Structures are given as C-alpha cells and as structure tokens.
Length: 239
Image (tube, rainbow, N blue to C red; front, side, top):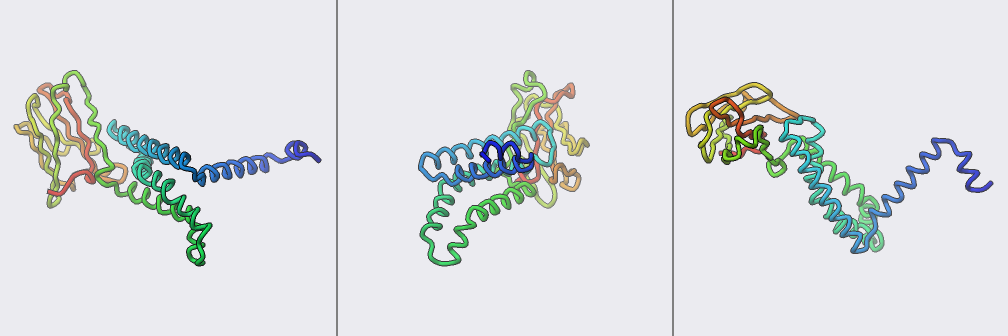
C-alpha cells in the first residue's frame, strides 16, 4: 500500500492529528532555531507583537471597552515586550547548550524541561499582571468627545491617594467651567470652582474588570465634555 493510499483511507481524526503533530514539530523547529538571524527575527517579531497587544488593549480601555480578557491581553503584551527577546536571545541558546554539555542529573533535567519552565514563569507573570496591573502598564490615550472644542483644553491631570481619599488637580483651568468625576456610570463628585481640584473617597468607586476605576471629565459652560481622563487605582500614586 502506498503513502497516498494510506492518506486516502485515513480517518478524519487521524488526518487532523497528523496535521496538528506536524504543525507542532514546525513550531518547535522555529522555536529552537538558534542561528543569529533567527534569534534576531524572533526577538524583534515578539517585541513588536507584544507592543501591539499592549497598546491596542489600552486604546480599547480608553474608549470604554470593558472586557475582562483585555486585562490579560494587556498584561501579555506588556510582559512579552521583555520576555520574548529574553527567551530567544538568552533562554533558548542556554537550554540548547545545557542539553549538549550538562553532566549533572539535575542540570540535565532542567535543560530537558527548560522551555516548559520558561513558559510557566511567563504565564504566571501574565496572570499576576492581568489580575493586579501595575502603573507602567496603563496608558491613557485621553480620548476627547469633541476634538474641535477641546483643542485648546488639554491640561495635565495629577491624581494622588492618601488615607483612602483621592485628590486630582489640573495644571491649568482655563476654558473649563466644571469638573465631574464618575465611576461605573454614577457621579462621584463635581466642582464648579476654580482651580477645579476634586477630592473623593476610594470607597465610592465601583469595580470595573476587577479593579476600581474613575473618569474625570472637564466640561464647558454648556455642559459639553471638553476632555475625559480615565484612571484606575493602580495608576494613582501615593501622596
């Protein structure tokens, strides 16, 4: 019986299994490709892919998309920016070298399972950062509801926390008539008095995708939003 006859009589399940096994072998061959040019391609590719996942998820958060999965996509991208190049520039060459030269049983065991250990550590980091994001992960694209009217209203917003209270201050109050703080769609506090600093309690904030967040809106005299800032408690520094 020829190879073509075998393929013709193989069951769909066997065919799918064969395709998956072949794809896995191809992935491993690329993963362990250790020439300098391959290491460069893989490191740069993962760096750009991580940067894309990180910035794209932050952009979606800025526009109010509140999917829990985005927390972990953002964490994955943020971690991959460092871990991807580190894996293919350092970890994989080291594992290959140890597999060839290791003499001690414990070192050989680590070398045989080096890729699994590396992947497990990476996934653990992603889960931790996705559950408890740190401040450098969070980008604020500050989408404006009306680009024309808010072109000249773009002050810096500085928020600090102390003793369960958050205080937000603006670098410039020109062109602003009121500042409103909301969380989970509910108004937390507002002020109509310059310099439009606001103070509110963390306990008044609602959780969104596993963490407390709030939005600071700068409004004009007609109540139109000039600028909107989204902040999470992870991005608010201690006073």
